[in-house]
Structure formats: structure tokens, C-alpha cells
Length: 281
Image (tube, rainbow, N blue to C red):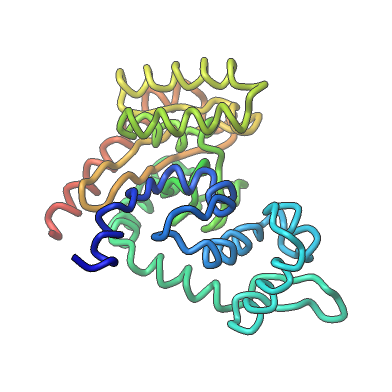
């Protein structure tokens, strides 16, 4: 038996969620031959950039990742060379470059759920006169993959995120997640928000009860004051878990309207998308 074969047999399988929920800790351990820590450092550095942090310097990146500043300097230089970061003019700081956008577009183009669902989302948005969005879980956030806007002051672009615990989308995603995986996510939320956890736990328990009874989850001003929304998950063995929501200011979408009208119609929309996906197999 070769040494490489023996190594593969003895290697501990990677727990993807464990790594994704605490990547920096895993990078520092560097104890798994299947995990390339240097690659992970570069990708985690790219994740530091967001709508809230569009321009960052090496010192800020070092604080955000916990990595040494000399390591950060080598990574940013490499990413600039490869076209994933660009240095600001007359500044030591960086922003994302076109190379990252090409990866994101390629990922969106491969989402069958997105292309199949869009026309149904348009119909739903016209009916509700409110935005309808599609999202998937990215660690402890819900990431927007598509949005249809109709006569709304709410503007959330593709790529924006919502918190997993307070948004209707996040709650629906958690409710549809298998119990063993949901437990790990809840532990991660508790670790990140220890002081707010008792209140978060109470809200999530209520959301899971709503989902069991009605098939959807609500957020009535919990994510953002004055904003009401309802969300329904789509669960597919092939495609995974995706979530659709419809939300608007509370004076346009009251709790009663969400429960009596929008929620049931959103469920019907998701069932229609599920059928369309099944037919395309």
C-alpha cells in the first residue's frame, strides 16, 4: 500500500460547515492535509470586502482576519497580480477588481433555480406590488441571488445579505434545514450573539412553529423596523435549499395581509417552481 493511499484512508473527512462557520480558527490549526491553508487565507481575505467595507488596507485586513500583517501584504500583492484586487490611486488601500465579478457571474449563470424561478417571481411581484427575492444561505447570512422590484422604495441588489436569525428568509432556511445541521448553525449564532441569544432563541422557536403550521416564516419588523416580510423555502435533493420572500413597508404589507394572502400565494409560487424544476430533469 502506498503512503498516499494510507494517508487518504487515515485523513479525517472535512466538515464543511464547521470550517465555513469558523474559517480563521481552522486556518490557524493547519492540521488537515486535505485543507490548503494558504489558499484559504487568500479567499477569506477577499470575503472581508463587502458593501459596508468596499475599500480596505492591510492593517484593517489583518485586524479582520487575525493574520499577521506581513502575510496580508503578500496575499494582497498576489491578488492584485491575479486581477482579484486593485490598489486605489495614491493610496495603500485596495478594492475588489473585475476578476471577482467574473467568478460571481459564472456562479449565477449556473443556477438553474434562478433562471427557472424568475418569471414566477415577476408574476408574484406584480400581484403583491412588492419586491420578491431569491436567496441562499452563505454561512450565517442569506445572500440575494435574484430580485424582482415592483413599485417599491426598498432596493436590495443581488449580492446583498440578510442576517440568518432575524430575516424571514433566514428563518425559513433554518426551519427547512435538517436538524443536525440546524443545531450547528444555532450554536454558531449563539456564539456570535451571546447577549441577544435568549431573545433570538425565542423568536426562532416561534418561527419554526409558524413554519410547521403554515409552511412559511414571517419577520414583522424584526430585521428592520417598519419592514414586514414572509418567506418560503424550496428544498431539493439536487439543488439544495433556496428561499423566496416577499416584503415591503408595513403600511403596504400588514401582518394580516401576509398571513391571509401573500404567504399562501408565495407557497403556491414555490410549489410551481418546484414542479418546473422537476419537469426539467
